[in-house]
Amino acid sequence: MPGGVLPYQKTYIQPDLLNYMHGFDLRIGTLECAIGSDIAPDETKMRGNKNIVYARNEDFHRVKDMNFDVVSLANNHVFDLGEEGLRNTIKLLEENNIAYCGAGMNLNQASQPAVVIVNGIKIAFIAACMFGNKYLGYIELAGENKSGVNPLEIDRICFDIKQAKERYDYVFVLPHWGREHMLYPMNDCIIMSKKMMDM
Image (cartoon, rainbow, N blue to C red):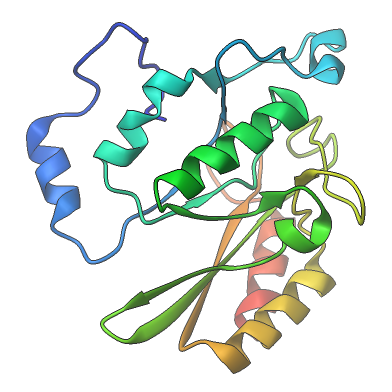
């Protein structure tokens, strides 16, 4: 969702920018919120007085209007409406034929790449989210039998990259990482990015 847009605001993106976006073969973004109407916020976040970021079902048209082909769900807000909100977000994406990666009902689903074919070229996108208090604070991580986001565990992500490169023409990684309000990337991010590029 475009940041800072209120439900009653009909203009959320300038027409010339929207036209510019529509001129590309592929549009990728991060959907850093949960989508859902009348869904209770995540209890853990509420108890910790954390920021809750979500949009209503009726506002989802903005994502479709911007013609996104792929969105990453690997972030610290996609679970802000709990598992029900994540399920609803995924349902809306699937109904609107928008590929997604980085979150799911279990770790297997969360770690699956989003795959698109453009002019006969197979492109895979892998998304993962950094976790831990020194980075992004509370994040609901996916597990073997638990919904959440794909954790940025570098050895596993590198393995996934290697596997994807054997199947697809191009592989892109969409990490959600680092800390806000910093001028330079964290050293951890630099180290991990080099490892991923070496795959």
